[in-house]
Length: 105
Image (cartoon, rainbow, N blue to C red; front, side, top):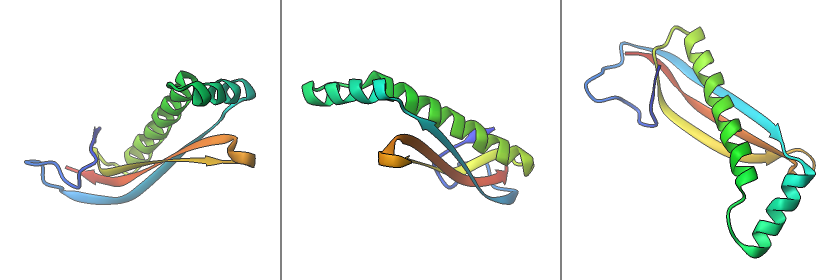
């Protein structure tokens, strides 16, 4: 499956547009991660724990997007867009939303 953030792939014309596709992944953080992140915010630096959670959510969302494209018979996804949000009570969960256009090249 070819995946790109661009609306086309040079030299590979779109034969058929299958449609817009969407996927999400929502992961809950926990109190320990929140505490460690708060300490990191106070003293500066990266929160490796949150980076790992976000990476996992992104990977899950992309896997789900690929499944959606495969269901439609696509062999590529164009114009992929990723968005990150917090949801739930007091932003206790992290959501990665991904969208794109499923096509046959």
